Structures are given as structure tokens and as C-alpha cells.
Image 1 (cartoon, rainbow, N blue to C red):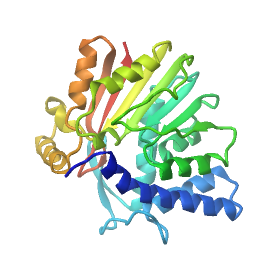
Image 2: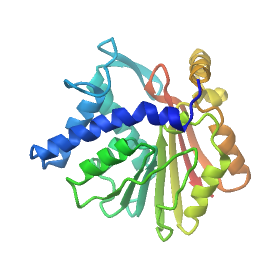
Image 3: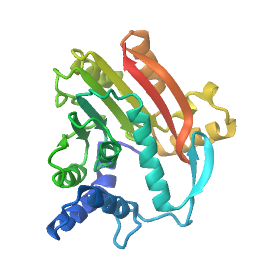
Image 4: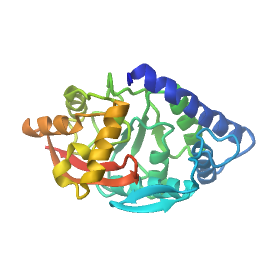
Length: 281
């Protein structure tokens, strides 16, 4: 499988474009409540309503890991738990006076909107960097219902990352990714170097990667069988294989510090996410 920009764009452009069309239709019908519109879009993107963009799994419940403990969750229960777990991991490192909160590879930015609903700083500027036009347009359509939220959906591609949309004058910055680096088989170390260069004037830069890379940290895994299973799953699908190498290289260059790693902590049991908290050195 060749997992490149064209592959990812083909896969997600139609899906997120469907979410865009749904949100636009909701607004045209008079929907003016941000929280209701967000939850309706979540249900649509999850495939839990007629015409939804993602086909629900054959089983009514999906095995899901929460801090490594497996539970079976129905589709929308899984959706809400997942979004709140992501919000928890980001909010725990986000200062109350953060001026920038950015997600790279954000789809239609449901994680960012959920952060807002869960109490993220109201005065911060929010950026949902996304490869697909459909995802960016969907996010902008939803954000338009909540004009008080300073939200922008810039074009972003991990293969050719451009972080110039991040304001250099921001003093406190939180950045994160969530199952987006997985789409880049070999992440360039220069991508994170460029991110750190763009935010060099900030007093603090806090980062979170929630990515399915637990098998890259086998010594931290309590479940050897899961580690080997996810290693095979990753290689079969040509997902990322070098995030650990990138992080360790930047650590050796004294550009960042890894604060903690929770291996195979959260996500669908077939391909769980590992949570990596880091900060600029």
C-alpha cells in the first residue's frame, strides 16, 4: 500500500466533504445552536444517523481501550468517550492563559470544538490544520455558528508541513496531533524542527501526540501480544514507523523533552493510541 498525500486525500476528502454538506444544510435549516450542531455533526460523521458518512462496524459494540483496560462500547458511546479522553490529555497540559491551541491533521476539527465545550481558554486562537478542503470547510461552517471562538482552518500537510499560520508572538502555545501522524510512514524530523522554529519566541510550548505507535516503545508495554499485533497491523497498512526516532533525535538535540508516555492507552483495541506529552526544551 502506498500511503501518500494522494491516498490520504482521496480517502478523507469525500468523508469530510459529507460532513461539510451536512453542517451547511443544518445551518440553512436555521440551526443556530453551536453545541447542538456539533453533536449532530458527530452523530452524522459517526454514521449513527441515516445518511451518515462512516459506516458503523458490523458489531453493535467495539472493543475499546481506556488506560489500557478493554471495554465494549456502542458507536456513539465510543465517540463521546474518545473525544473526551482526547480533550483530557490536551487540557491537562494547556495553560489557562494559552494564546494558541492547534491541532495538526484535524479533519473537521471535532477535537478542537470539544475542547472548547469542555472549558478550554476562551481567549485563545484555535487552529484546525487539515489536508482536505472538505474538512477545512466543514470546520469553518460549524465555527461560524460560534463567532466568539477565534477559529481558523488553515491548509496543513504533514508531508510538506507549513506552520507559518501559528503567530510568532504567542507566549503560551499548545499543539497536538491525534491519529494524523500515523498517515505518514516516515515523518521528517525537520517537520518538528520547523514547528519549534515557528514557536521559538513563545515562553512555553506544550505538545501532545496521540498516535498508534505503542509498538515503537515495546519496553513500556505491559501486553506483549498487543504490541506484536499492532506492529503487524501498522506494517500491513504502511502507518508511521519512526515517530519515536524523531522524538529521540530532537531530544538528543535538546530541542524538546518527553514528559511521559502512556503506551496503548486509549482507542480502538485493534489499533490503540499511545499518548506522548512533551514540551519544548
